[in-house]
Image 1 (cartoon, rainbow, N blue to C red):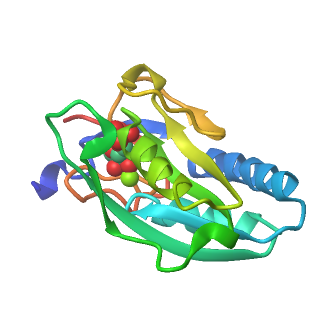
Image 2 (cartoon, helix red, strand yellow):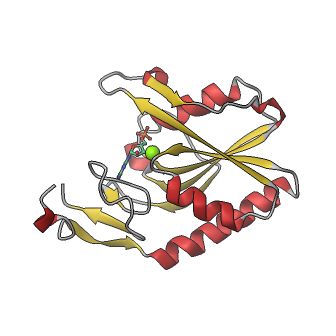
Length: 178
Ligand code: IMP
Ligand code: MG
């Protein structure tokens, strides 16, 4: 990473920190109304979800457990079978209402695979809340239950999202020159 170009590569702010927080507050209300006091297990796929999950968790009022997952996807093949869970939930989720907080849905492959794997474990319910969605990039059929921001096909960084592992700590979502 050329330090000279580090911040100048960010073309502009697409979603401000304040807009993110306002959107997340609404998503928290959606989760509260969905579960109506029933406890949930809030999970997300590292590393992208870390900031979103931290803020989303602070907006929900239902009793909430937190657990992280990690997954790797392999390029070059067509189906969702090429996603491998590298950090799994340790608990039996069959007694849980599970909510996945996802940073961004792009091709849809990661979440299609992860939700198929989790659904097979028969949780009480499973919902996906996505911070960002790029529906024009979809290669597999997948739709979140709640999407905060729909964006065009641009590469974005910040608020958990990276380019070569950088920029995850930006408090806003920016578009980057790559
Ligand atoms: P999918 O399986 O193609 O939906 O990929 C989702 C993953 O790709 C996300 O969790 C991100 O890690 C990554 N990704 C997709 N689009 C972007 C982007 O614009 N910026 C940063 N990461 C992205
Ligand atoms: Mg991710």
